[in-house]
Image (cartoon, rainbow, N blue to C red):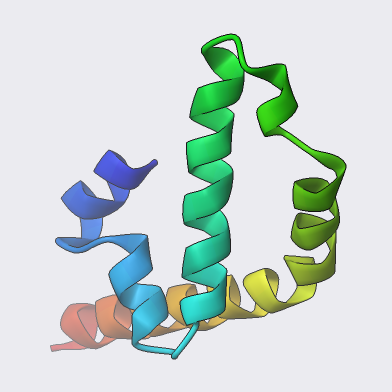
Length: 83
């Protein structure tokens, strides 16, 4: 997804999230990615109840940030298409 995002938009999702001051979401997503990698490399304890709780507690904030980023991207594409 990260590579596809860069190919389509020329930046990263994290950089777009920074434009909306979503540093806490960036930190959480980076931590989830790091722990997921540990999990698939035979460290099952990397996915803890604490991490799962943090993800669930942040779902609404992440979703709202995702909507804001993609609304911005959609608006930019529409303005290019209208020009």
